[in-house]
Length: 253
Ligand SMILES: C[S@@+](CC[C@H](N)C(=O)[O-])C[C@H]1O[C@@H](n2cnc3c(N)ncnc32)[C@H](O)[C@@H]1O
Image (cartoon, rainbow, N blue to C red; front, side, top):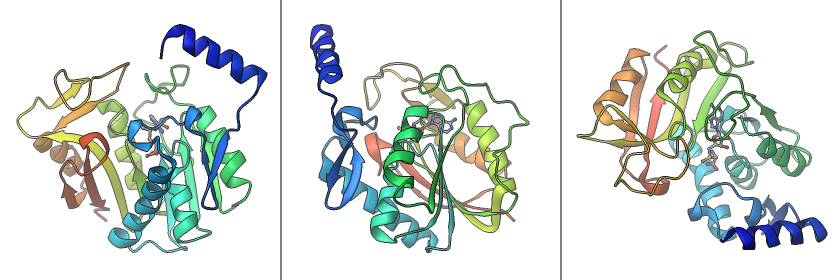
């Protein structure tokens, strides 16, 4: 879209404000003009279908039930939460994100109608999503009690965080996970590439902006996970959005 078209759009939007959501087969989802997820999710039906698929993923792989305590880190505009509501109903769910607008949207259009779904802003620095946040150090801990979470879920999050931030999260996940707890995350993972590359040239997507793609060498990523003691339950290569891989972990305890 040209700069002129964007300016006209903004002006039209301020005169005739557009709705922040669209209703699709009984669920409110973020309106396409506010949707931050990639091109793959622009279509409303595809969005809803992907939300339901994510809920089924947690049920099929982790035997998730309405009693499971789920932590959705980098929840964005509530895609997983919408899927869980459609597939399971009220659940013990917390979504956190560094992006204030996304959390506000989730509070207004999910939490208000479904109070068992809680959303919290975490004002941490991310060069792509929250430039005014606070940089995290090794001592960082989530505001969550020890050994209280059954499932931690991060879709397209470690694909946009530095190795330092990813390690800090992986370390604190060990504290907050229940003994039988599980983690699911997606990441760009390849063999025969450098340990970590940020915005690799000639890869799957043309990168735009900071931390668009953080790509790992597979043995290197697995060595990081082993350092923290995680067992890899499953690894599905390039099955996810934009060619990311799916990784399923279990708590070493
Ligand atoms: C590509 S979006 C994915 C959103 C959602 N998981 C989904 O699949 O629809 C990445 C999300 O991660 C969030 N994020 C980035 N860094 C984060 C961090 N350090 N902690 C929590 N969320 C983060 C961004 O604000 C953004 O909402």
